[in-house]
Length: 370
Ligand SMILES: NC(=O)c1ccc[n+]([C@@H]2O[C@H](COP(=O)([O-])OP(=O)(O)OC[C@H]3O[C@@H](n4cnc5c(N)ncnc54)[C@H](O)[C@@H]3O)[C@@H](O)[C@H]2O)c1
Ligand SMILES: O=C(O)C(=O)C[C@@H](O)[C@H](O)[C@H](O)COP(=O)(O)O
Ligand SMILES: [Zn+2]
Image 1 (cartoon, rainbow, N blue to C red):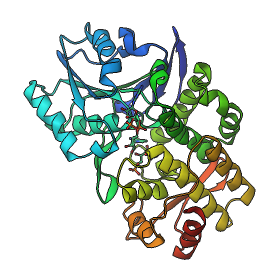
Image 2: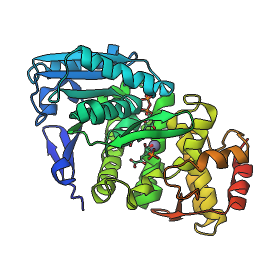
Image 3: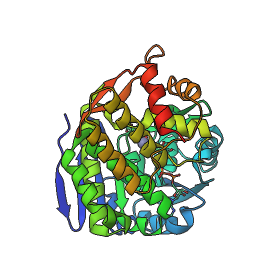
């Protein structure tokens, strides 16, 4: 069971994710990337390697490097190609090649500087390089700050399915610098809001109300409002992961909207729709499924779909054809013996895992695909 403490510490708020010997702090604040004290407790290995990409490295790698100088004698940088289409073996191999070329050993610490793609790939590289080295998450997108940097799911995509190859590997620390959100493109900010919206319907009805009331401030990047969204999202995710680190049961609720969403991402070829866009649409599909099965009042499904739409996220999916959707969804990691399990809602604030008749899925896809 996870215990969460939120400790204001000279402008830094800390959420502790309780996982026994794998416990770690999530530090949230402005300017943290430039502040050496943000990384307190991270082992002082001689070599540290920052893994970033061609977009984020020019913006933030030098500041992070400067902050880390007193902690590590040598700080190297690996710059990956940018984009979901590069969350693959080829880019992962670039990390391994660079680590070997720079003499990285078992004590070397990796720092993932970027969005969820860099975070998932760096985490997977850390899980597997020399059978495991420590890593730190320094998320720079809203999506990564509220979701992907926390919880230790790491991996890469396969052309047939999303995140199909990976490992659970927890970071030693997560450092969220809210200032990085000032350079994030608007489309990416909206994509991040999809995962923020997700937490209300699955776990906290009052947070859904808060997001509805504060959506305009979030879209306007009001820092205090973003800070609350990040903090509450991380609290909810930390509590869930603290109870079920490896998704034996409860953790699956974090997958709300993802069975449909991952099918959209894989079906279109990674990158055409952003992960957050696909999840937004997937949540609309899951909400409609919940209503069609009589689990959720129609008005509640409509309420959620309205919010997703207001956030500028798609609520209608691409027309891949129902057969293709079903084929892609059967590869979902929650499926058992080919039977797909969906995260649905039986109330706003409460999620359940259910199989759904194909006929209902076909109705939902017919109604929600353009
Ligand atoms: N491990 C998990 O628990 C988990 C959870 C959610 C999502 N994910 C994964 O995360 C990925 C999506 O992450 P994402 O939405 O962060 O996408 P992303 O990593 O592709 O980043 C989005 C874009 O923003 C750019 N960028 C990042 N930070 C920036 C900044 N501060 N200023 C300007 N540009 C910046 C990136 O270079 C990229 O072009 C998907 O692969 C998804 O599967 C994983
Ligand atoms: O942390 C989790 O657990 C999640 O499901 C969070 C999701 O937002 C995230 O997209 C995750 O990577 C999906 O996991 P997967 O196991 O379905 O690939
Ligand atoms: Zn997600």
